[in-house]
Image (cartoon, rainbow, N blue to C red; front, side):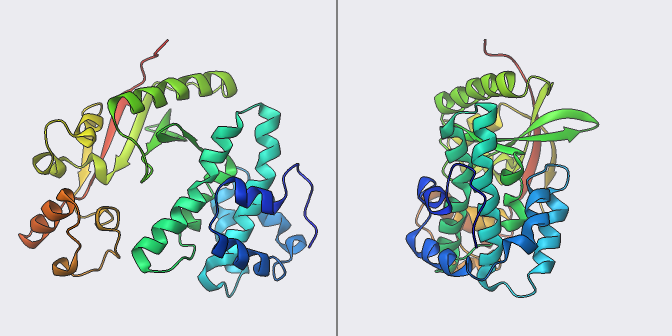
Length: 280
């Protein structure tokens, strides 16, 4: 199927974001199975912030069978490929495009670590990247969001983020410049973050010099969800339903969290707010 020429072909895009060779080979086969003419309406809507979520759901239903969700991956990467031209038109630096779209590569690798093989299990999230709703800027990801009717920037912490004070400060400075340059009309006064890394239960498990605690301390914790089990996948890189006795103990944090779980405790997650303070 011929693709729209938007300045970057699929193979170039895959290699630009460091997509795994095994996945590239599978996508080249899948590409002959996906009719982009029929999928076009879904792709257009998935590249729009306002319709991306529903378009993802519609496209998922359109693919009655999608082994390892590779058809969804193919279509979302096609959206990402087309976005290259939009980034160029807005004069957004190429490195931000690459860092943002490398989420696909990172998620597939995380899937391999957790399940022992590579497939795509994050389409329910990545429609945000291909609709220019999330941008990776330095250590952190930044998303257009609302909180209590107010425009805010939602922060996300990638699994490979450097949370040292210097790295986080540099990311905030870069983000301030980014939004002030490319999205001047978007006025926000606060950052929000909802993550297991914000959970107060981590405090007694970590040293006083912990980068995680240093990041937490930037925020006012508004609420906590102790029932959230998602942290198990992130801390241990295993499925969330893994027996506690079978959890790996390769790192100090893994050993401490495992012991906490065996004693009937939990980590959960928390939601925090931080006022935006200009660096310049």
